[in-house]
Length: 164
Image (cartoon, rainbow, N blue to C red; front, side, top):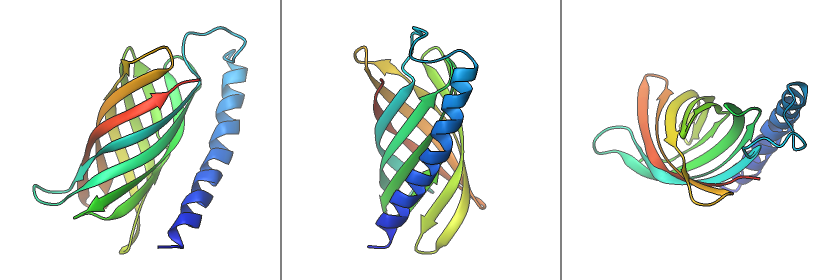
């Protein structure tokens, strides 16, 4: 288990080092930046708590962290890392691309599922509904489906995000 922590940190640093410069360049090129006075937060770090299920009887508690960089009022890109414990036992690392319309956010996220049985390609699709708690905080219940090989896993939970 000790080898997983450096791998996790390394993967997150690598993803952030690629995602942030690309999205920042896109936002600057399209006139979005802190000096434009837009009505949304460009940065949304979050924590996630939920459950992941493969069948009626196999499920696990899921904890995660995420970061979204909004490049416009409707588009965002980010990174996420989630750990599922219980009957199911694995890590998920993904790069979500999101589209927002009102309080709804739709996402598509290519990534990997890493377990003791190996690493497999994963593709997640999902939706969130943002409930604004204050000017900076939001609570977002979500429902997603992970496609991993021939398996489909449902992920339901809630994220707490703070925008800046």
